[in-house]
Length: 165
Image (tube, rainbow, N blue to C red):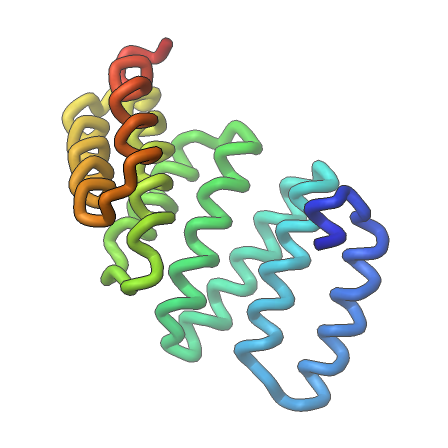
């Protein structure tokens, strides 16, 4: 909440307290979640290098625990941080890795929306076929969910996504 409200100092302080509690409980998953949150606060503060480092640290923790939901969220956050940093090729690689994870039922809606971002990156990197595949998968996801706002957005933005407008 503090990060979203722009209260980054308060968010960082609370996350440090959370980290101490999670470590005292030997809560490895909780540590990973807290590291993700610290990375997102760093990104919101404009420190994209620190955000990148923290999210990669969280990914290693989730990989070690074989925690698929943790990996799913971390890869998506990392891809979006890299996109914000202007590292389009790295963001593309990370989001492709994220896309290739097995779907988790609660991720269907965010997956469809994130595929729109990956479609734009694919187009920006010159792979029109991959961009079209991402848009097609997003459309199938929105249809399966009966997500009218998603379908309307896709219908109004698909051509600009592919043409770069």
